[in-house]
Amino acid sequence: MRCPFCGNVDTQVKDSRPAEDHVAIRRRRFCPACGGRFTTYERVQLRDLVVIKSNGRREDFDRDKLERSIRIALQKRPVEPERMDQMISGIVRRLESMGETDITSSQIGEIVMESLARIDTVAYVRFASVYMNFQAVGDFDKFMDDLRPTPKPEE
Image (cartoon, rainbow, N blue to C red; front, side):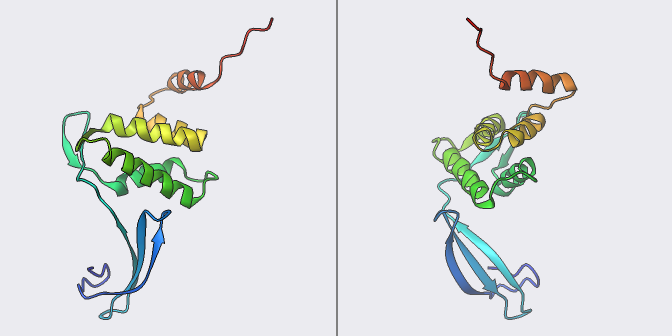
């Protein structure tokens, strides 16, 4: 593993342990050349996924990009980091097990929204506002009306 500080390719593993509910291995590494310490994560990757964007462009699936967008939605929300990591791993496993290597960005967005809705409603609305490209307050109002349960008629 290349050292992120000096570029040395001869780094040493100092500690390994399971992470993300035994879905990944967390490794603490040390670089003898510069003395730097850093952490890496090793995960099973079932297949290489390709994301088909709404404009037709294709790009390799990037777990880090997915994680960043979810972290932004969950920023300052009372959700434990372990729960968020489990959710991200679950989304990636679900995408990999779909049987297709080409996945549309809209499919990914729907799965993320579904997962966020189960964990935190505010994060769900935050993500939806970007994913659905809300342009005005009315867009929020309509979305929130759909979220609110309809009152039952009184007898």
